[in-house]
Image (tube, rainbow, N blue to C red):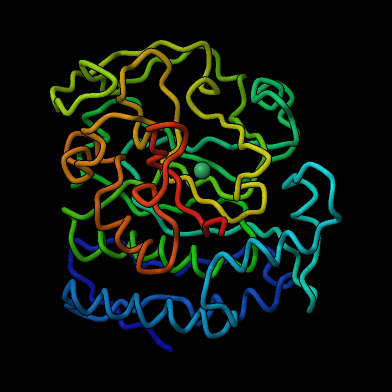
Length: 336
Ligand SMILES: [Zn+2]
C-alpha cells in the first residue's frame, strides 16, 4: 500500500518503515513486515492514527496466526531441548518451521535529541555485564547517548534517526508496529515526540564498550526512593565509562532471553535517586507517567503503555517485579 506523506516545509525527509537487516534470510518475517508499515496520510488526526494502528496490529496478528501474544513464548520454548538454561545466543540461531531464523535484527525510526551520539552495543551469554563491556563479544545493535537534560527535553530540536536491536522474528512485526506508532506520533505532533534512545529486546547480557573512558552525564534525582514528590534536581554524574550507563543482564526466565521482551530507554545512572528513566522502582511518583515524561522526555508517557496494552502486551502496571517494585521500561508478551 503506497503511503502518502504530508510534507510540511519544515518536515524532515520522508520517514522509512521498520525493516529487518538481511531480509532475504527471513523471507516470511520480511513479508509480514511489508504489511505492518503505518500510513502517513496528510493531516491524520490522533484518532485516525489510533485506528490505523489498531488495523495494522489486527492485520499482523492475522498474518502471524496469533491472537494471544503469550503463545509466542510457548512456541519459542517448544523449539528448545528441555533442561538447559535458556540463552538468547542459542535461541537466536534456531529456526521456525518454514525456515526463518528466530533471531533477526530490526531497524526502526526513532526521534533523538540534536547532539545524540550513537554507541554500538555488544552481547553474550555472560554472568557479568563487565565481561561484555571489556571483551565486546558480538555486536547486537546500538543506542543513543545524550549528555544534558536540556538536550533531552528540547523536542523542537530532535531529529529522525534509526535504531537497531535483535528480536524474535515472530514478535518483530508487532514490535515494529508499536515502535513506528511511537515515532509517527512525533511526526504529526512534536509535543508527542518520545526520544527512543535505547530499545533492548533479544539478549542475555549486554553492554556498550568500556573503551570510552571517563564520561560526564546529567540525570534527574529525587528527594526519596518511595514518595510522590516531583521535586527533581539535575545531578551531574561522573562514570568510569559509558558502559556504566548502558548495560544489563536478564534473568534466565526473562522473555528477553527468548527475544520477546522490550526495554524502552534502558539505562543506568548509578548514584541518582529514582531518576533513571523508566526505572525499577517502588516510588508512587512513577505512576504519574505524563508528569515524569514532562520532567525527562526519556520517561515513557502513558499513551505508550496504553498502545502496548491495546496490542496485547503485558505492561508494567499489570504486574509486580519483586515485592512492590515495578519495572517501568519493560513490556513483553507475558508468561501465562
Ligand atoms: Zn525488560
